[in-house]
Image 1 (cartoon, rainbow, N blue to C red):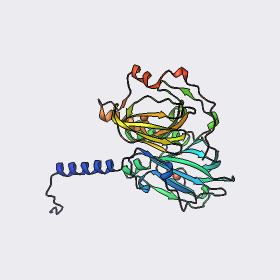
Image 2: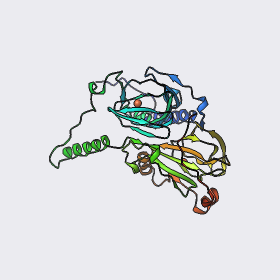
Image 3: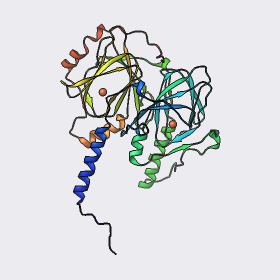
Image 4: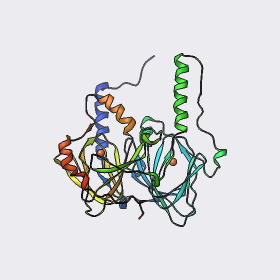
Length: 355
Ligand SMILES: [Fe+2]
Ligand SMILES: [Fe+2]
């Protein structure tokens, strides 16, 4: 038998060229701040309108987590669909509902929802005003691995649609096959029973040494079982800043309220300032020093940070050891950057508003 697929270059050269091309393309797509006003919102056949902040379908390819805004107008019910990746929702305006595997959850601004992989879900609005939510999903990462599947169920009732992909639930014995079946089944069962909703009303903010007041919205620490997707909100005092740090990308910061700027640079004293305001998305897409400043001297700034580092960072930490993938300044520099935390007057926590 002859092999006709001959190449005149070596494995080493092919790989080197491929890696260089990949990183070149990735660099060309880097962003710093995506301004909400620049995001074009289009009607979709799902009957809800969508605009892409970051993601392949908005021509800004990324590697792990995409970001989009969706609008559910008054009286509309979307089609039902499901996919092989999971997603989180941050509700930013109006009141509406989301049905996850037949369970209806009503939401308002500031609420967070979790859409597990393979769950059938749709959205509806029974109110008089449009409702709006941001979504962040693991689709890019799942797509990188080649397992991206989306199924649209149109207007079919959930009871008529196929259930979750089946799995072997148990097998007696202590052999490696039985152990694998039990381990994977236990993990899936735990995931099907994870938390789906955090209401704004139950949030509790705590002051952090980084100079902000923070709360988890959607995280393992508050009962969620995601692919690693996590959302937390932090609030920066009037005229104050969060301390500088750097970590691996991708981390997104959605500005819920306020205005300010972020420093980003290759060194703590070498970089540029990027302005942001309500509805913008601050992009930390690689290992750069960054610090966020609230430029309003009267009001606080509220920012929701989203990433999938919980699972990925552990993996990357292990793969890159002894590189340090999360770097913070020494305590004395941090306190110079944040100022005296006791002098920040925090306002009453109110639901966000849109516009
Ligand atoms: Fe979805
Ligand atoms: Fe950060």
